Length: 107
Image: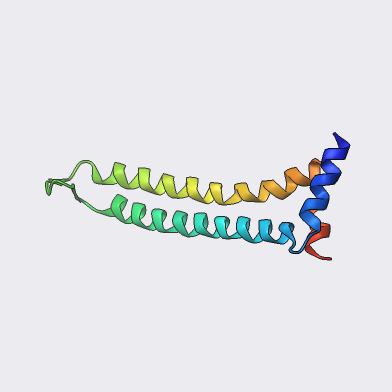
């Protein structure tokens, strides 16, 4: 088990380009996407929750479904913001497994 962990650490930290830095940039971009998506979904959901009527895809205006639909959209935005925190757990998991990613990031 320890041999595999040390080999994984060498692959992440050595080579022509640093995979740990690439992994960190990729996870950061994923987090930024989820944060932007969550904020947009929350804004649209709160707008729909405050409206008095909702126009469906069939063109019919519905007055009873708008607040509930808006609350569901806003809740989806919160889920996206929570999903933005999940990529942070990858370096933590690698550190628990014995691969020190932070040492690779700042050589």
